[in-house]
Image (tube, rainbow, N blue to C red; front, side, top):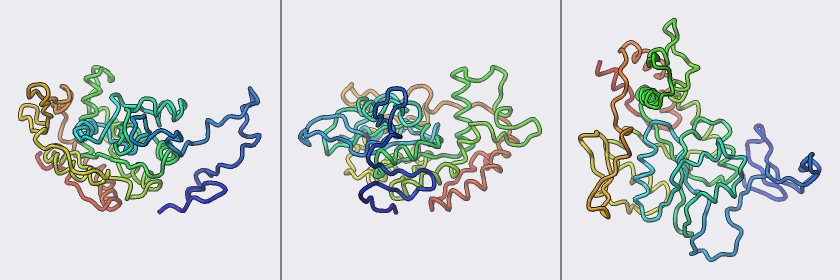
Length: 320
């Protein structure tokens, strides 16, 4: 657990990383070019200092953030959670803590939806998960932020990631999955971001160091597809809201092979997250898949011990 915040300054236990002690402004707080006080480096720990009534709609900083993992089902999870009457989220991914941090918390708050005090503001940006500076930045905003992480078989995740890159023309036309994840000598290309992202434990340990297990909830991407209602119940419990998501609004689309959402207000039409969800992955050879499974296996085992949860992540290998 974290140490108590005491006066005259606020301290956290990670002093070896950076001492976060806010005292009276000194000359070091001066902007050397303008000789004016610069407070941009000081994290804002109080969300709203106004005297507005608690039941008024105002823009608030998020209490819950889906921080990753890319190509594991984060968009689907957010769309399902937005079916809850108390959960509100912005449309696009804010990318505040990784790309827009220089804009400040006022900008971050300004892109959030207006909510009442009892409602939950949430956002999702999967890139947060692999960004080394983001855990500390979110902690500085609020150490009580609840974080949700979606993980899936890292080999399938890599295939999905590469498939998306191909569809967006982000790779050369002659690039294959094998060439992307293996070196010429056949060893794993550990410098490939597609490979690195699947080493989940490498990143989760950093998040746990700041927030602890009580503020982090791990979701199975596979179960999100096969049993979304069960997953949503655990997430609602973690967030601290009543289980109010209507299970009748989520159904499994056999054509897409993916759960979709019924939109009752539009004459029972459905929302299936676009053509990119549930699409077929690029094909590759069994040797490449085996190399990847062998590579990820020790990292997976370490992860299971860290999070005290086990997943069956060798399905493709067992089918070969």
